[in-house]
Amino acid sequence: MQQDLNHIALKKPIFPLGEALGNYLRAHGRATMLPLTYRDLLRWSGLMPHVDAQGRETLWQTVLLHPAEVEEMHENLVHIYQLLIADGRKAEHLTVASIDFCGYGNSQPFRIKILNLINDNHDYYYIKKADASRVYGLELEDLLSPNKINYMVQGDTLVEEHIIGVPGDTFIADPMQFGGHLNPVRLSKEFVKFNERTFVRLLGDMRAYNFVVDVIQDFDQVQYRLRSIDFDQQSYEGRHRIYLPQFYKENLPYVRFAEQYISMENVEQYRNEERSLLRRRYRLAVDKLTELTGVMRTETISTEAYTRALAEDLAQLHNDPEMKRLENMGELVHRHILRRLEIDG
Image (tube, one colour):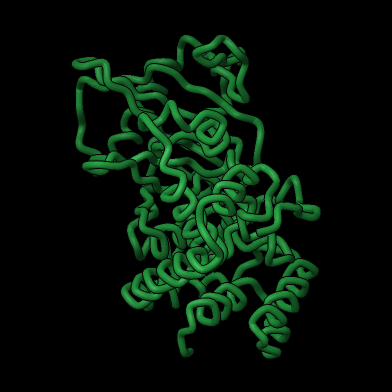
């Protein structure tokens, strides 16, 4: 495995959701009427730095609301949480504990902390700028990964559930504190499988801080699941290596684990195992995937230059000259999935 990676765009443009994507979301229950929008949350009275448990400043800032708007805003935010996780059924004992804003990244999210007043348990969800790239990424994650994704869209507002796990860079810095002990073989196996899942659906920029590690206690050992949390770079960049987490320097510790603890024969075995699982998921969701990539063909989610470059790159990788003639990312994603999973179509 190689670790070096050439240039990647630092700021991807936001692509609006087109009519066809909107129709798809309504048809599949993703479009929901919300009591407030992303723009409503921008009416803050101020921001203050948000610090972590060690007192260090983070990329987040705590939102201060105008006193006259706090009650109504909190009520609407609790309602959105109930729409997200309980079909809108009201629970009197929930309240908003905090609202944080992150100006870093494309979607510039608000993080809403919901507190259960009965048992002090809390949960998070996010309100973001709706971006077609991200919505396609969320749908492909839901259809092709082992994880289900819960989200809602209204106009230019996107609401997402919180994905539980330890940030990949935090985990690998001291993995012994998570799960009691480190199982390097299982961690390496999961990184190989994650690498394959990401590449098959062309999700880019999976650096260690853009995925989380879910540590699962087995009856006698520890198991791991790597989960994407950033879907902004879905099918945008123009080189296939950008869609392979193994090439990012931030993921070098995971690559070194794999090189140290599993052989290349094992790597190929795990890739084949993951492709087999992906083929099963594809067949179970083939109608919906065909519909989704068909919608993707009608919209712009990358530049012409990147699309041409990726078409040539993938044509060479798959030894498929016909791919050079494909003119949009929807066609490329669909054909790449078929070629990588060795599915006729």
